[in-house]
Image 1 (cartoon, helix red, strand yellow):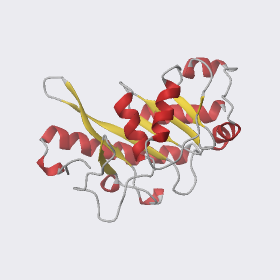
Image 2: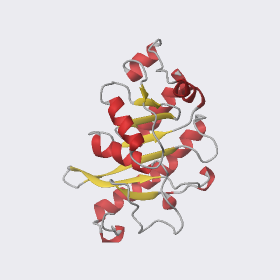
Image 3: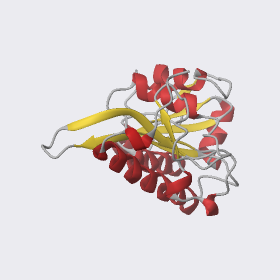
Length: 211
C-alpha cells in the first residue's frame, strides 16, 4: 500500500485539476448511456489528472479519477468520483464513505503507468464489440471509417481475470503493436484509450459503431 494522500494537503493547481477531472469523468459516463454502450452499472471511464501551470507547463500527476463501483449512473456526480494513485490505491480524502473504485481500477492504473500519452481509459460491454470479443475475433478493417479512426483492425487481447492488473497487462501488450486506440479483451469486452477521457469515450463509441 502507498502512503495515504490527503487532497487538502496538495497545492491549489492539483486540487483544481482533480476537481475538473471529477466533473469530466462524471459527465462522460452519460455519453456511455447516450451511445448505448453500457447497461445497469457496467462500464467505466477514467482520466489521469494533469495540471497546467500558470507558466504553461504541464504536469502529469500520479493521480487519476474513476467511477465508484456499483453506483447507478443516474446517481453520478463529481463528488462521488473516486480519486486513485497510479498503483490503484484509493485516495480516501474527498471520497464519500462506503464508495470503492471500479473493479477495473488496477487495469486502468497499469495502462497509465505503461502507455505514455494516454490520459483516458474507457471500458464498456457494448453489444456488437463484445460479440467479437466473445468469438475472440478482431474486427477487420473493411470500412473507410475504420481506416480513419483505427488505422487498421481492432485487435483482440488475451483473456484475463478481473480484479488485478492482468487486464491492463493484456491491453498494453496488445496495443503496443497496433495503431488502434481500442482492444477487444477476449471473452470480456472492449477497452479504449485516448489522450484524455473524452477521446477514449469517442474511441469506444466508434469501436461499437464499426463492430
